[in-house]
Each structure stands twice: as C-alpha cells, then as structure tokens.
Image (cartoon, rainbow, N blue to C red; front, side, top):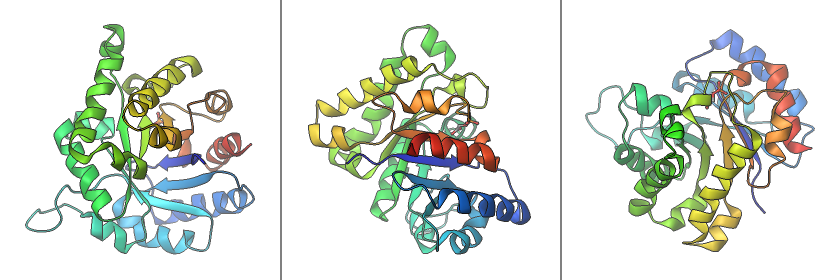
Amino acid sequence: MRRKLVAGNWKMHGNLVENEQLLNAIVTSLDELRNAQFAVCVPFPYLPSVQSALKPTNIIWGAQNVSQYEKGAYTGEVSASMLNDFGCTFVIVGHSERRSLFGEDNHTVAQKYIAAQRAGLMPILCVGETLEQREAGTTEQIIKEQLAAVINVAGVESVGKAVIAYEPVWAIGTGKTASPQQAQDVHAFIRSGIEAQNINIARELTILYGGSVKANNASELFAMPDIDGGLIGGASLIADDFIAICRALSN
Ligand code: PGA
C-alpha cells in the first residue's frame, strides 16, 4: 500500500517554547487519525526535544538537510548518522531553497540522498521548476533531469526507500498553489518515469505536493490520484491549519 504522508517543513522557524506549544496542540488531534502518516521536519538543534515530545505519539520526525559526507573535517555540517542518533525517519534533500540560496546542484543533492539512505534515513527528495521554466514549457525536462541526477547514481531501486516531493518553486511561500490538475499532471509524469524503470516501485511510491498547501486547498489536491500527501511549509507552523491539512489526507 502506498504510504500517505503529510510532512511539515518548519524551515528556520520556532524556538523551544513555541515548538512545545505547537507540538502539544497537534499531538492530541493527530492521535485519532489512523490511515496516514504525519511528520515534522525541524531545525537541527530541536531534534532532541522534538524526539522526546513525539516518541510516545504517532507523529514521526526528521531534518531539513544533511551532509553528503559521512564524517570528517566539515565544519558546520551534520551527518546522516547524527540524525539517526535522534530517531529521525526523514530528511528533506534538494529543497529549492537549498538549491537556490545555498548552491546545491543536482550532483550534491544526489550525494546527500545517498548519504541519507546509507544511514537508513528516508530522503524526501524535492524537485520542481521555476516560473521561468514553466513558462518556457520545460517543466517536464527539468523534473526529469532532477530525478535522473539521483537515479543515475543511486539506482531506481533506491526510490523504493524514498519519498518524492513535487514543489514548483513559484508556489513555495508565495500563496500561489499549483492547481490540482497542474500538480496531478506533474505527479503522473514523475510516476510514469519511474514506472518505465520499475513498475512496482512506481506503484508504491509516495509523491507529495508542496507549495502553498493550506487548510482550504488541501482536500482538492489530495483528491488527485497521484498526489499522496503534502510537504507543508508556512501552514505547518499553525497548529489548526496543520491539523486540518492532516485531516484532509486521512479522510
Ligand atoms: P510553503 O512551503 O507551504 O510555505 O509554500 C513548502 C515548502 O517549502 O516545503
């Protein structure tokens, strides 16, 4: 059965007090929801406190970035095995903010994906086109290249231990959501690309949509056949909104 998942991406937000309030609020409501998984991807320093808050609950957690290196003289970096020490299930790799603001190219993203899987973490691999690329009609080409960069080095079998998130760059944090049909078209394209290489992995693959998912548009996005959940930025910081989005998936 394909995993249905809503993952919050807190980005660089929160503090100990706010996090506790947010988690307290979502834990109780999400506890009653059964047929989907829920996760939060949090800033590194909060992993220990998030781990102890969420351990007794049905919410899982992860990080937003990981080093491509296993260990060594890499000042400021955090390795996949360090994330393992704090019980992470997921780590986001290739988020467009990492690509555009921190210079991560397809090659680095692939190395991070491999490092995550080597340590037993499940990468949430983000792909997506910019507005310029969409307007130039190159969306599929861009997505194909972003996926190929990873699959060519990690192998298609690795996708069986990953989640893919389609996040059109123009929809992230902008309030402009892809229409359900626009998102579905790209999700179907992603799935068929994987299907051509391995039909079973394609069928089981969880493909999330991300980019201005809110309480009022989640249901129609999640109703599309190839949208298996969401990667939620801004709305994951507001308990009621995040809960509503999770409910929309688990219904
Ligand atoms: P957003 O962010 O929901 O605030 O658009 C999504 C993301 O960046 O993962």
